[in-house]
Amino acid sequence: MAEQIILASGSSIRATLLRNAGLAFDVVQARVDEKGMRDSLLAEDATPRDIADTLAELKAIRVSGRHRQALVIGCDQVLALGDLLLSKAETIGEARDQLVALRNRTHKLLSAVVICQDGAPVWRHVGEVRLTMRGFADAWLDDYLARNWDSVRDAVGCYKLEEEGVRLFTRIEGDYFTVLGLPLLELLSYLALRGTIES
Image: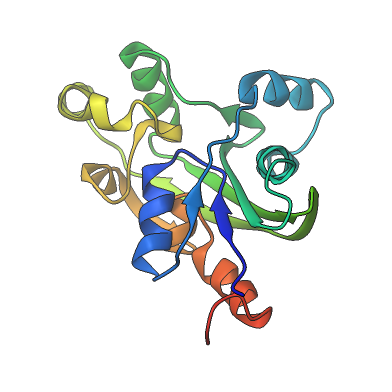
């Protein structure tokens, strides 16, 4: 009997990536206090990599406790600008401030994925991408946010590379799927290796 796969995320892009890769899975959104946990980890001087990994694990464990035989996929993504960790903007003004801070600089996106079964982690990976943002005029930025706010308001960094946000960048070093929030190639390799999906 094939192993059940559950995506412990409400992210439509992650679900689309898995669906497009031909995976059969269910979605059970994990209910966790991400902001509270992130703030607690920051207070303990956790690295951005550890924060992404811990949050992904927490989501997977939370759902795995209720679906013990399934392979539960938990994910999280953080944006690090030097030592500063940026969260999703709550207002268009915060989004503008973040993009101004990112302008003409290189930042990192860290996308963590953890698989849990029977309430415990069985596999994990953290992908890292370096993105360099171009210089852009304030007027262009204001127009960009006016056009795209409804789409990017839930995106860390206030951009979506698969949409107009690609115009913000001059260089991207790393895996495209990791930018979208799921290190898909590594995940598929693991599922194939364990025999969960055909290879």
